[in-house]
Amino acid sequence: MRPVLKPALSRAWRDSETLQFGTVHRDARVVEQAGPAFCSFLGLLDGGRERPELLDAGERLGLGRETTGELLDSLEKAGLLDDEAATREALARYPQPHRDLLGPDLASLSLVHPEPGAAPAVLSARAAARVEVRGAGRVGTAVAAVLAAGGVGAVTVVDGGRVTPGDCSPAGLPPTEVGRLRATAARTAVQRATGRGPAAPQRRAPAGAHAAPPSLVVLAPRDGSGAFAGGAVGARRLMRAGVPHLYVGVLEHLGVVGPLVLPGASACGGCLALTRSDEDAAWPRLLAQLADDGPGRPRTPACDSALATAVAGLAALHVQLYLDGTRPPSMDGWCEVSAVDGLARRLRLTGHPDCGCLWQPAALR
Image (cartoon, rainbow, N blue to C red):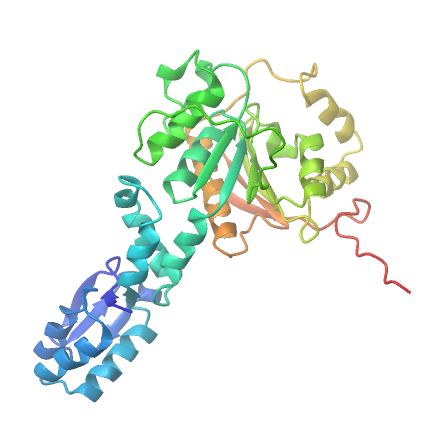
């Protein structure tokens, strides 16, 4: 380990001898009696030295080896240190210039996962993950671009047809892509988010080859129907295959993120549809008319640019939380953001008894 003070933490003097690390009050750490020798020692925590070298340096500064060791342990316990060697190893998994762009993301991860080396480990796990986004509209393409920028190793976007003006947004497809194939334009957006050049054509898998299932699938239909558990056929296939998936979209004035479904372990889109049917007996009939190219679909789906961008960012954050090993609030629930008042709300979702997705197999006798 090569200890380094976390670059994301600010340092400010509360008084002439009291040094505060961090700005957010509830997470800040305070060091009292921070004298000149201590401050000089902090300057050595740049990731260029291992612990034995730092102990020697502390002794030369007059701190003493034992005191220096206790100081290093205290700084580590307080979440102020990271491992520069682990950081370099994690970043080496990415090509330039993406590696340089990930600095702020890794700095943020070091505060969320405070143990030395924990943040680089999380970033390495993201690099090994694969996420598939189904839908290249205002929400889907932005989700894909944000995930790629945040270090997810492989992000693919699945959609057909050509880009229309209604698909474009500042966070996703620019207006210059109108008329281009949606899948190609979305791939370019993902490449651009990581600082790479124009997207290269995707390679076809050899005949008979079976690709590993994605780590997670984001269901983001361009018309926003995914916000109300749309794409039932595709979702059922994902359930049977055991693939985690997240519903996301903007429908009319409402942006929805969730539920994030972990097959067999959390409430699914079927649970949501049955719950809505319990509240409104006509819901299945209404949903059927909205599905595919049904007569109930709006001619111009409403999708406010600011709301779509907010929903895409929230959805990408939930995906990152799941990939990083944290349970996002869209599991066993969903989050709504309204263009009417700008407020975000979480609604709870329990497994529906008639769905069967959480039924436990009967014990063998």
